[in-house]
Image 1: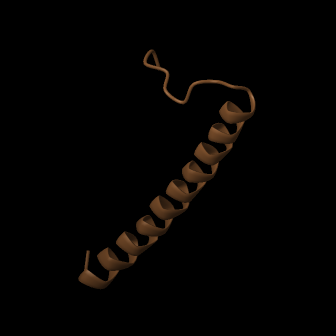
Image 2: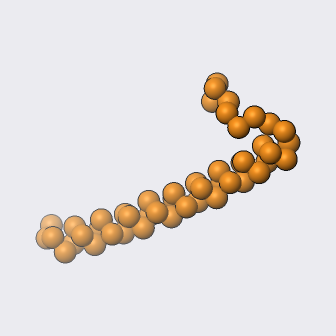
Length: 47
């Protein structure tokens, strides 16, 4: 594999990682809002 191909694949993977991280943060914000609305603790040691 040449360097250009490797860099292209790395860039594509970085986009996937970034998108997954942003989605995770959206879900975390939703979970935090749900817990706040329902008076649930933030931390569950068993999880």
